Amino acid sequence: MPLKMMFITNEVRIAKIAESATVDIIFIDLEVNGKNVRQANMDTVKSSHTISDVSNMKNILSTSKLLVRINPLYEGTQLEIDEVISRGADIVMLPMFQTTADVVKFVDIVNGRAQTMLLVETIEAEKSISQISAMSGINTIHIGLNDLHIAHNKTFMFELLTDGNVERMRKHIMRYEISYGFGGIAKLDEGMLPARSIIAEHYRLGSTQTILSRSFCNTSDLFDYDEIEEQFENGMKAIREFECQLPLLSNEFFANNRNDVIERVKAIVYSKRGA
Image (cartoon, rainbow, N blue to C red; front, side, top):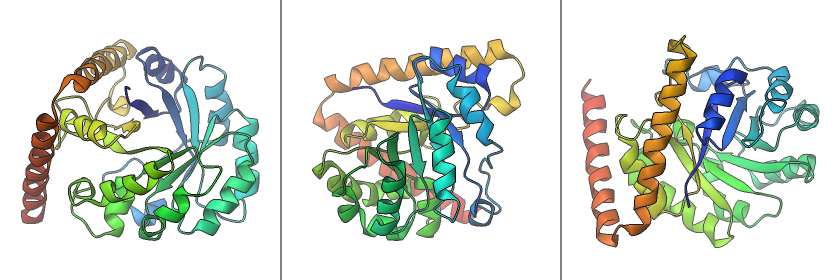
């Protein structure tokens, strides 16, 4: 089964391009609380999305689902969830939660009005993954490698893939038949760790989704919509063609790919620490 691809944008024209290129989920990001502190001095995208983007996006999508990442739980969570659902969110994502009590509160507020997605990006949530996965009302879990690797004081986010963290969480999640995914990818043969290698790991681990990263198509640097469309069409076509090959490949291929990913990550970490 091909991975569900998510792309973060609040620009309706780019969302339509992504949708036409078989991107499954358009991602509105309302999370701002605490993010600047957590990701200070990091080359990460700080969202400028607004609540009005939710309804604007919902009005133009026809096949892609609309995901909205809300703020971590706070006194305004009830109102925030109510509004994003009323504006058309198909999936509501909860970031930076820590306890099963957080999950209960989130699920209770959503109350079946939309699908729920938990973003595991704290050590506390990781440690509680078995109990969390057993809870009702959870549709999908996404392992957020960026903030989680910061919490672990790791050098490179994909260390969590090679040191067994993702695999340990995956075993608990899949025991309860909850769909899950992790991290993000660039174009098929681009990125510090090529997407080709990461996608093979997704397949080996039974993951069902990932995020198309800024480096897949950095729309902030492109002003020609024809170029954006070409990048999406070519990039997604290459990924989908590679995914079609994966069921035909041997266990030996996946074992070799995992070993290669481990060695590549070690080299990246070494170079980053020496920089």
